[in-house]
Image 1 (cartoon, each protein chain N blue to C red):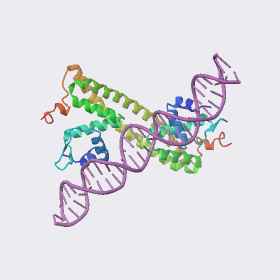
Image 2: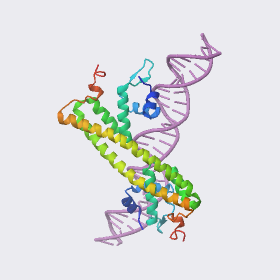
Image 3: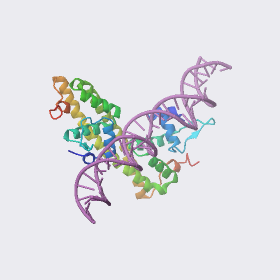
Image 4: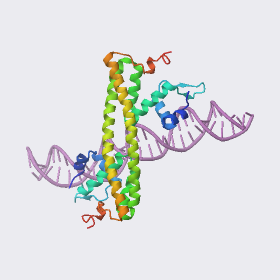
Length: 135
Length: 135
DNA sequence: TACAAAATGAGAGTTACTCTCAGTCAAGAA
DNA sequence: TTCTTGACTGAGAGTAACTCTCATTTTGTA
């Protein structure tokens, strides 16, 4: 059995966020000690893992709640759960692609600046150094 | 010369967001028509591009403003700009890695659900169907 | 000239945290 | 036994970055 602190450390999520997620109904199964303290077991950790996954993938909390509720309803909801996961997978692939594109611009800029520093050049890209702007 | 609408379309950003970014001081060079309408040229578009890049990479607006201000100060700030870009590049690589990890969980779930649908199985992963929980 | 489409700034609303606070509770030291 | 420390609690305020609405101009085509 894990406390919030344990889960926070294990999963790399802040305690605040876990409490916030719990209040949002993302972990319907966690038990409490006699003194009202949340106790997560390994199954609960699996839920935390999937919630984290969906959040990282940019699924909004309302949709995550929907997914959790579908899980609780049971096997009849597998098709809708499937479509949520599928849409999320597609969106994540798109997101990675976009990040990779921006990454290449960052890499370009980085080596550009490095060149300026190494060879003591001017930043010819900067509009400030461009005659158009320096009127 | 482009209006906000043109830029929004060209860059895939909402007009609202561009106005918000402009108000945040991200585009210090845009001119206005006599009747106060923003007019972007191709150099301004380059600024929009780099701001978009930094935002996608998760750089917060305060830091983007810093970067813009450094550009305006001029060549002496290239080292600090370099370190901002470098840090952002590293963060982005990390982010892509994280997304790829979560993507593989999504792929696993997707094929798992697909299997259930195709072969009319039960969702054995769901705690609801697990004897531990189904007490 | 008329009028729909597009621009403006101000400001309210939203999401998802993130943080602060006041307070409870259990365990070990003095 | 009292004190201190540290983890926990819920309530609620604060924050970032949009996102949207609104009341007004402004502009471009008929």
